[in-house]
Amino acid sequence: MITTEPRAFPIPLRLARRMTRMPPSAVREILKVAEQPDVLSFAGGLPAPELFPIAEIADAYAKVLADEGRAALQYSTTEGFGPLREWVVARLARRGIRASADQVLITNGSQQGIDLVARTVLDPGDTVAVESPSYLAALQTFAGCEADFLIVGSDDDGMQVEALERAVEIGPSPKLVYVVPEFHNPKGTTLSLERRARLVRLCQVHRIPLLEDDPYGELRFRGEPPPPLAAIDDGGVVVHLGTFSKTLAPGMRLGWLVGPREIVRAATIVKQAADLHTGTLAQRAAASLLARFDYDGHLAGLRRAYGERCLAMLAALEQHLPPGTRWTNPDGGLFVWAELPSGISADDVFADALREKVAFVPGSAFFADSPRHEFLRLNYSNRPPELIAEGMARLGRVVSRRLA
Ligand SMILES: Cc1ncc(COP(=O)(O)O)c(C=O)c1O
Image (cartoon, rainbow, N blue to C red; front, side):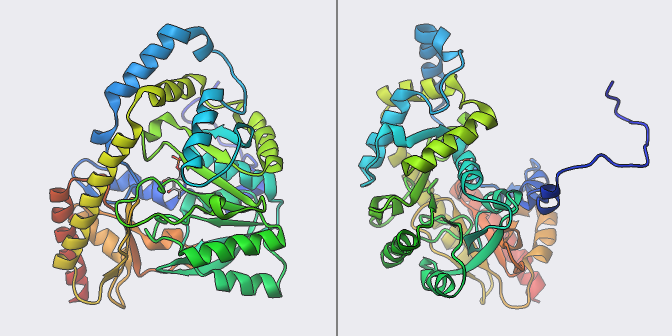
């Protein structure tokens, strides 16, 4: 019997050793506070819910249930629904990525792709190279595999690949390299073309799987897209992750992993043990939707809206934040990364900001090594321009007070 007040025993239940390396996600904890209804939150990485194609998704689910309900509600293959895998192949071909359907594994969002690749490649004590700062939930996944980190610095052109080259030259090679090349989370920056070529070459020469996490690549609102790492790779080392979370809806939990056959096969076996397969109904509904829906038109609308919101945030930062504050200038994606004037800690500003009813994620959460406290991550996709302006005005007041 489970009771809310269990009897006390002197010996605690024993958890796995890896749990000591997996603290709860700081961002998820912050979101619990930040997402209160009266707080203007720029903390989450949430897409704009008013732009979800709800009616079209509802129609797709209804059609699939009416036309193929028995199959749509049945167990299905681990690899994923054939027509959806074919759609992924055709879509990626437009970005120069050549793959066949047997190299595609449909996942529960790209987060599961990170987990499957990590568990396919990493043994306890292995090293994974990551950018600093990096996507927090990937760091959590690697820590859960009891991996060690090789921390590689980054600047406005993304990961400092030269530093990784030097580290690989002098030390043992990492077992995996993880990178978010396009509209980085948390920084919003893009890996330069020159660094892309060098990174792929380095991983090819040293036979290191290179995990390209690309949830934002289709959300470019300015400039020409560089080729994805997977399009440059002619040596079979890049594993590319994509997702519908930021382009259709994250609640569908649909993503894909595309890569060398030996990794896709191994990841499929890991997935069999993890969850058998991704939800059949969601996969079939997505395939049905994409066969009839103007996906490119929908993406154009998202890009327009996010471009406007990003500009609104950059203009409001310029207007309200005191001198000495700096920020990145993204060409797409969801985030701006700001650096506070020297001597001011984002953790202190966060506490003040909540009292002013505005929230963000303090940047310290995104560092795998010693956390740095002068940064904050701001999301612009989830609020209309007028609320972004109001939120940045509140933030500006808080930072100016701290500075004074
Ligand atoms: C860099 C990065 N990778 C992966 C994910 C996970 O996305 P999904 O919803 O596809 O699992 C996110 C979500 O914000 C992200 O920012």
